[in-house]
Amino acid sequence: MIVLQPGPVTDELRALAEAACAEAARRAEAVLLSYSQPAAPVDALRLYRRAVHAGHDAAYWEQPWSESVMVAAGSARTLVSRGARRFADAATAWRRLTGSAVSNRKDDLVALAGFAFAAEATRAAHWSAFGDGALVVPELLYRCDAGRARVTLNVIVQAGQSADSVCFRLASLLDQPADDTEPYAQVAFASERRSVAVGGWSDAVTALTDAIEAGSVEKVVLAREVALHAHGDIDEAAALARLREGYPNCTVFAFRRGGVCFMGATPERLVRVEGRTVHATCLAGSARRGTGPQDDAAIGAALLADGKERREHQLVVGMIADALMPLCSDIDIPSEPSLMLMPNVQHLFTPVEGTLSGDVGVLELVERLHPTPAVGGMPRAEALRAIGERETFDRGWYAGPVGWVDARGDGEFAVALRSALIVGSEARLFAGCGIVAGSDPQREYEESTLKLRPMLWALNQA
Figure: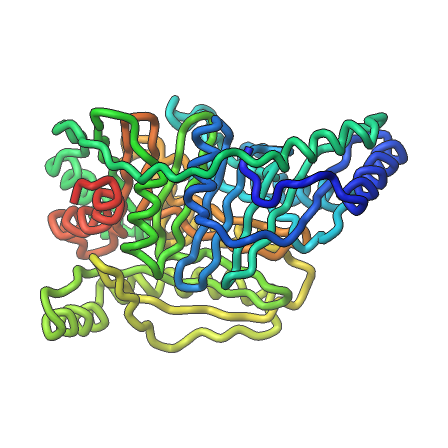
């Protein structure tokens, strides 16, 4: 197991174990014990790779621009949720678990979580380990913010369990393995690359634009999947290292469950809650980057003036505003979008900030906001029905919310875009485009190709 500060069980830790055992006995049910201590900053990606090599489920969350990173290893408790109530059920289970938890620093009690784009009765085999939703309380969480690092240990204490056995388990989490100095490795890929044919894509886009012109739906986000095959197992840490290097203004994430890894570098925050302050991002409308400063500026100006792209963007702004306003005492939304510049693409971008007026946590806001028109469409029900009819693959967690939540209900979730599912030597990449009135199939296909580039590059394929 990953550890950062080896040593004997302290008096503080033993007292916490005894308190947790007493609480479990009083309740006659299992409780969560959470212990946090300072740690020295380390290479978070090497911690993640240690967890992978040890065969543990793991998670990685990094925002390079804010010098913030989390690595989770193992599972003290996994809260699985299914169906249309997966967000509400996860929130209820999380409040119950944290409400009885025994901790020396409850602010450090964090779960990493992810949810499928849509609840499905059956999932594709490669998504089966992920399901509709999972909220994982890791056995060990390393977190570093602006150079200040902490490690949190989490264990479940059963009613009737002895403090000695709890201390033994905690001590096992504090065993120090040899340092991981193995270099990151890239593997060579086979030439096979499977994707939706251009003709099939064109037919789907044409059918959707016909439905839009007939008035049955306003916008549908159509996605496609590309499958790559390598000659050897893909080094997840190597791909993550490239993503954080090449896309430092994105959230770099990985969720590993049952030997399968879902990773990406997404530019789109869904929602962040800090106390009573809520932040959301409206991101829709895209164009390529230019070949030089003048070309880049001209493309950006054209994007800002493009009626089709502005309509697509405004649908997202309107939906997010409608979802947040009933819960906020005030809300700030710029009247005009700006440009978010990525290495390969530029987007129309509108930040939203509000002050929450009630007792609402991040998971409740995720439920209200997902899926936004940027990944689903408008109206929501009609767009989701059209996606089900036109897409030929299981999105799984692609375009779903991924992120973290703490014991106060604060946290942050991003939209899982620019992403791939890694299964041994195979990678499945995903990208989508918003189809509205006037959408051109070839232009949308080219846009989706742009959006595939971050993961292709991370896998040494672009």
